[in-house]
Structure formats: structure tokens, C-alpha cells
Length: 277
Figure 1 (cartoon, rainbow, N blue to C red):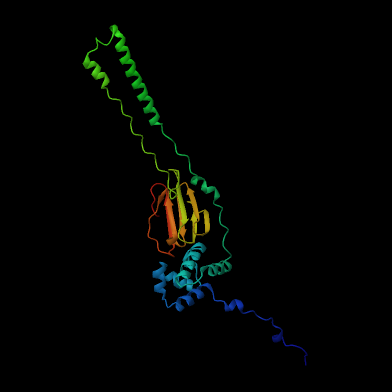
Figure 2 (cartoon, helix red, strand yellow):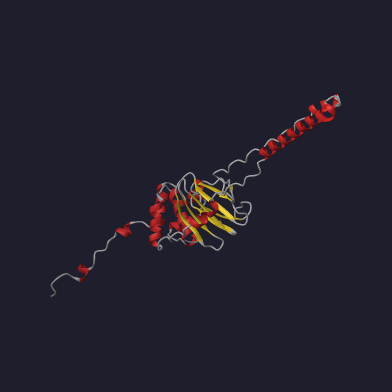
């Protein structure tokens, strides 16, 4: 007969706190049901395909196409079902190895420095100098003509009238000064590169930017009022987590698109006139 606890009694106590917390997909599904929404309703409101919504609610993130897209979909779906997306993003990162550190984008801002505008010739000063020369020449001619042959008797009245009636050349009106570039434009955007400026005008938005080689230029959250500028020799690939709050400028021109709040947009821009890829 043995004395003491049995092997079952010596098993360590299992903490069920992690099991009690629902997964990311389960939390989204429960919030959707509590809000009285169907998968079709969420897909229509967020523009996320029905198949991807079903997969995410089943904690299958493979159809999203990568961690960057998965985070964007989680954030969009959370807003649609009235959940705070940040805890879900943090839980997703913890379950999938964490978010990669963003690539410093400071060297890319060189194109945003405003170059001094070249000033043209000062035509106003040139015209004033020309008028002074003409008036001086006319006065000298009249005085010299009055002294020739002992006086002004030999000068015909018509000649005097013609001389005195000579119209004074009118100075050309100087051209209106060029307006200063607006804050919305990207100053001196190079013609041989593509320059993209992203501004979180109406709220916070997560964005991701890559160059033509697929190198990550930026992956993070823009707070309201923040801006980021990216430049590449041929192409910039963008993902906007909440495109409805973004103002976008490509090669100095504002992109006018009716993006809805919470919409995830994947965009590609190249050199020349802005054109969505």
C-alpha cells in the first residue's frame, strides 16, 4: 500500500486563460453575428471577397496572400463589425512570428525638398532703361536741330510737329508672377522617376510601400496629418489599409478617387501621368 498522492494528483495545473481567449477569426465571427450581419453584408461593406471572409473566420490566412494583406483584411473586417482592430493585429502578430521592422524611409525624402524657383530676366527694369535712352535721344536731336544754321527758323512747322508728336514707346506690362507651388504638390518631381506622396488627411491608416524590386520601403501606421513620400526609378507598389482617409499625390498630381472609409486598396504607379496599376 503506497502512501502519498497518486500520479493524477501530481499533474501540473493547466492555465486555461489562453484557451478561453477566442482566436482572431473566432473573435471576428462572434462580433459579426452579434452585430446581426451576414458574411455577404460584411463582404459588400468592405469589398473583401466572401471566400476570404470565410477563410479568416476559420483562422485560415493563406488566401490573403501574405502577412501584409492579412493584417489589412483583419483591420478592415474589425471596423466593419465594430471591433478595435489593434488587439487583433497584435494577436495575429504573436501567432505568426511578429511584424517585421519597417525599413527606414528617410533617404527617400530628398525629392520632397523644395528647389528654388529660377527667376527670369527683369523685363521691367530693361524697359525703363530703354525709355530713358529713347527720351534722351529725342531731346538731344531736338536741341541739335535748333542750333543748326543759326536758329529754329529753318525748321519746318510740320517737322517740329512730327518731332513733338512722336509717341513715347509704351513699356510692356510685366508678366504676372508665377504662383507659389501649393502644399499638395510635390515640388520638382523628376521626370525620369516616379514620386508618390501619401497623406493621412482624415484619420489613421496603415500603409505598405514597395519598390519595383519588391523591396519594402515602409510598413506601418500613419497618424492623422502624417505624410510619407516614396520614390523609385520605375514603379511604386502601395497598399492602403483605410483608403478613405488618404490623400494621394503621384508625380505632383492629386489622385481623385472615391475610396470608401475602411476600404483596402492595392495600387501601382509608374513614371509619367498617374495611372493606377
